[in-house]
Image 1 (cartoon, rainbow, N blue to C red):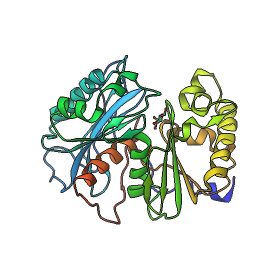
Image 2 (tube, helix red, strand yellow):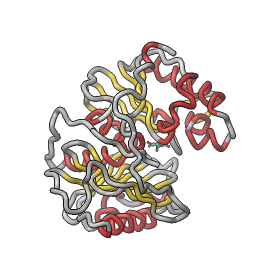
Image 3 (cartoon, rainbow, N blue to C red):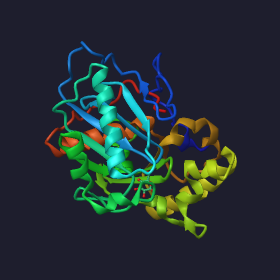
Image 4 (spheres, helix red, strand yellow):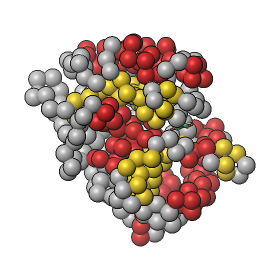
Length: 313
Ligand code: BGC
């Protein structure tokens, strides 16, 4: 393994608290809270709701922005089909009710929602892995109305990247940092000296004459019935392309496949430093909450870093 890859997975180890349940069909799945953040403990100063709308699951939790840890159970529902704005907004509303039912008050908390597409001025502008009807109305307005609170929307990979830069693998890294999220699609988040260049959409690079994510996303691996080694070899060629275009000082791999690192990391031949996301796929929730709070003036402490992480399913 390359010297630069050796640091992968180092640092914080994922913690799966007792009582964690996995997602069932249409069932709510609940991950236990972090850091003793249950009912009755003192409320941290800076809380916001983070929502991650993916092609497969909709997830949300309250986030303690002083540390980046989850301050409530993380609740997940399957993404409704069709994934219209109304159906997804209903799913988020159910999830928030569920969080409330565990004794965590979300009233008055601002919310951030990561969505799988280009986001501009509260509108979703592209919809590769979500129902196209999202493009017809202002997504932020729909969510604000249904959830009765201020909502900021952001690209899901940009949200995950913000979380990793603030609390995870990207902490302290200047220069060019590029995060890729590999799940239903492939998302990207580009940072220059810590500042996000939004909506980079590198999952849609042309690769072998195809849209890259249709060949090398996590879902594509399953659809194509590729083993980890065969998938990793193709993904490595895609990764090499991305390195050539951007020469990142650090590359961070996240999304659903960041849980499976051990199965494929040995087949990658990165041209530069590579780290696996520390927040695993809770990053989308944490980053969406952070973006929403920052838009309302919140500034987390410089040294913020996650002390415990939930292994998000
Ligand atoms: C979308 C991106 C998104 C990525 C991961 C892609 O299909 O175009 O906006 O970040 O999937 O969800």
